[in-house]
Length: 427
View 1 (cartoon, rainbow, N blue to C red):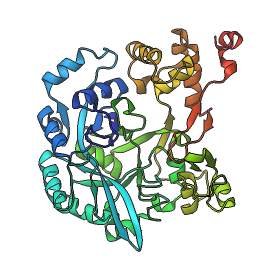
View 2: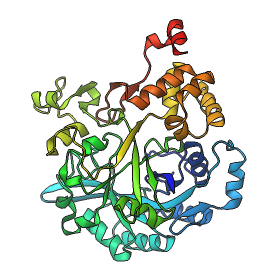
View 3: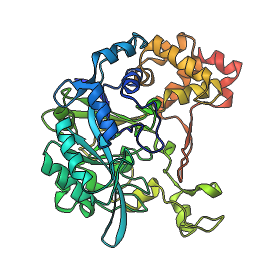
């Protein structure tokens, strides 16, 4: 079975996250976006754990569905073009802050569990280590290797995946607090690590530059802090719709497979290149080296971004694809594209109205971004959208890359595209 999974999100109990992140809203937005399996987020938080238990019921092995009475109320307002089954998979992100090899490490890891009973055992162990109530993404003084050992001792079906692996401040390869290899972090338990999450600021070709990742499957997820941010990245899988089937795909077992990851253009990520946000200074790696790692304006250290960090650890030239690598596809969120076609912000009322009209007309967001022929979209009266989608699919973009916590900007349209002559040429 082919379906899309987004396996890293957050709950309303995580800092800086929307109160709209309820199971009902997640169920709704999965259908609008085109997601079949969604991570639950934050299962270690007691209030969220209880809400999940109250609102979800067992479905396929290791997966959960929204209770029928709750789903029925939501389905009334879902366009027929978008209606589909949605499943939930128990997931949490753990922030580990600890010292190792003489350096402070700040590593975020994703933990997955196959059942509420197993999740409860993880919670019981972690409660002895730190506070699980203050944040949906708990901060623990716990070595990543020890965390992995704990969850594997509870059940071999529990899994750990390093989150947004290249983010400077909180990631396994992060420039500010990470490691130079998986082995340095997980030591003799490294064989238990079968996947890493690329994060918004890197994509597969960047990760391919490390031969040490050739046998590691690349995973891409939204890390959504609000329902509308679901599916800004995802995983297209071909496997059984079960917990084991999904992880067999990432482990490359039993004919299960990751067909491709659906990726941000990495330049749009908040930490793609180097820079200093306060001074509005962004730098390519070679310029950072030229300035000895200092901001040319205030002379304080810049934040070293993902591109620079990859370059530092890379032992393979650009453009070489490992034989074991999965495919990938770059996407831009539909509301961002519509904002460009309408010359307004992606959160405007005009964009929201057109967004829902398009979903009712053509189907879910992933279907529009990836599959609806641009000729069809053009013929239905959306020529600029057709042009923008065609350029996105071909990778014909203009970029202002993100740096030091500032998202980058992907431009798919130019001023000349809005002239009457250009409009006529589209037909």
